[in-house]
Image (cartoon, protein in one colour):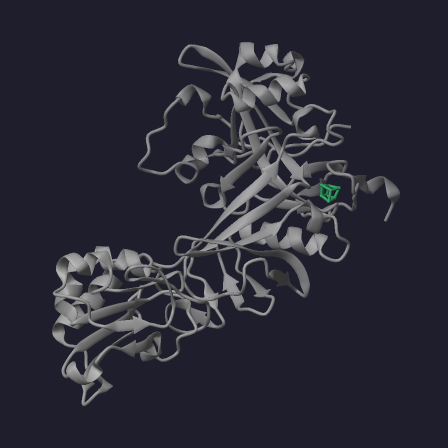
Length: 456
Ligand code: SF4
C-alpha cells in the first residue's frame, strides 16, 4: 500500500491515518477517494424535529429553531478553526444564523434514572463496567434510583477513561448496557425500556411512597381491611394511625411497626431486597407488636407494596396472625394501586461542558458569547433538542438523550464523547459576538446530501 493513498484525519488530536475505503478509530470519518469525509451527511432539523420536541408541544419562538443540526456536520480541530457549517436564512423577516458542529467533550457525564423501588446498592457505591469504575450511585429521587456516570476525573483515568466514554456513548445512543454496583445489584438497561435488576425485569414504578398511597387510595383502603400497611423503603405507612385514617377510619388498630417513626402513621423504611425495597422478606415482620391482640379476634390487615405487585391479607385468629385469601375489597384496592402505577423505565440526561475551546469556532468573543447563551439571546440545542444550561459560569448543559436522534453521539479515543451542538441567533447579534461573516453560507446553497469533507 502506497503512502499516498493514506489520508490523515485531523478532526481530533488522535490524527488517524486512514487507508482507502477504511474508517478511522471512531468510525465517524473515512478515506473516500483520497479525502477525509464524514460517514453520514448533515441532518436537517426538519428530518428529526418529531424526536427533538414533544409531539404535542407547538414550536414556540420559531425564529430561533435551527434549520440544520450538528448531527453529521463534522468536527474541526484544533478549535481555532471555524465550525464546519455556519448558515444564514430568514425566519419571520429576521436574518438568522445557525452554527453547528459535532463537539468532542472531555468534560461530560450522565445522570441515569431507573424508575424502581428495588434496592440497587448504597448511595455513593461505585458503579462498574467491565471491571472498572464508571460512576457511582447518586441520591435517590422520588420513586427512582439514580446513577451518576462519567465526569472528567474518571474520564482522565488510564484504566477507566475509555470504558467510561464508551459506556456513556452506548447509553446515549440507546443501546443495551450492563453495570455492576459495588456490594449491590447487577443492572441491565436500555434508555426508554424497563430495567432488569439482578435478572428480574422491573414492571412497575411505585405509585408514590407508602404515605402518598394512603392519600391516593384513602377510600378504597377504608373498605379493603380493618388496617392497611404499605411497605416502602422511604416511608412505610399504616392507615389507622396516618392522618388520612384518623379522619376516615373508626380508630387506631393498635398495630405498631418496627421502623422508626417519622410522624403519626409514617415510618422511615430501611433498604434491602425485600418488600417495597426494604429488608422485610415476610410481610408480617413489618409489625413489631399488636396491642391487646387477644381482644382483636377477626381483625383484618392488608399489607401491600406501593406497586401492588406483592400483597397479602392477614386475620387475627386466636391471638395469632393467619394469612387468608384477599377479599374482593382488598383485591380491588391492590388492583387500583397496580392500575395507577406507571411502567418502570430508564431515562438518561447527558451533561456536557461546552464552555471551553468549543466556543472558538463559533465566534471570536468567547465571554460575550457565553453571556449571550445564558441570557437566552443565543439559542443552544443539541441534535435539535432543547437543552437546560446550568446557572453560573461556563456552558454546562443537560439534554434528554431521548430527544435526540438515535446514534447521534460519538466518541474519540482521547477519550471524549462527541455530541452535536447548534447555536442559533439573529445575524446582527452573531456579528456583535465576533461571528465569522466570511464563513457564513446561505442555507439555500446547501444541497442534500450535505457531506463534511475535511479541508486541507
Ligand atoms: S478518532 Fe475519529 S476524529 Fe479522531 S482522528 Fe481518528 S477518525 Fe478522526
